[in-house]
Image (cartoon, rainbow, N blue to C red):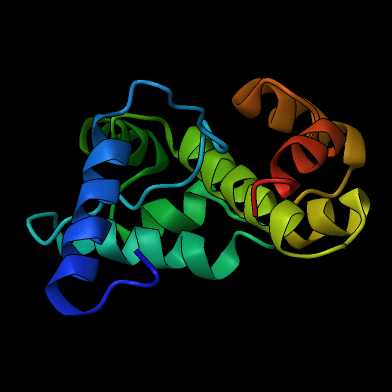
Length: 150
């Protein structure tokens, strides 16, 4: 493909993309990676909560604060969030943090402790436990396994 010119190069690229898309040999490198599930049809309420979490995931993210942004009580907000996001608010924050940790593990040489702190975890043991729950492995093994891919 690299040596082809014009239409032949584009055609080769499309054939490669088609082969990748139809392949059954899939190995996800981030099972729990964060996906932005907020669409244009979602309310301003969810967008403001999403923005709050994105701006604060490195520090403290409070259910009470998110509920306040949505003009709901914490209990009502929990029900509302679960109905709109198909996961609890806590699970959403955890998935976002671990997804960011996965990116950091592959994109730089920070220590595991630095990455844990950068993603909002104050203790390494809690970070390791959540990381293993979502990815099925520990951060060191994850880095070793997937850093070869990049």
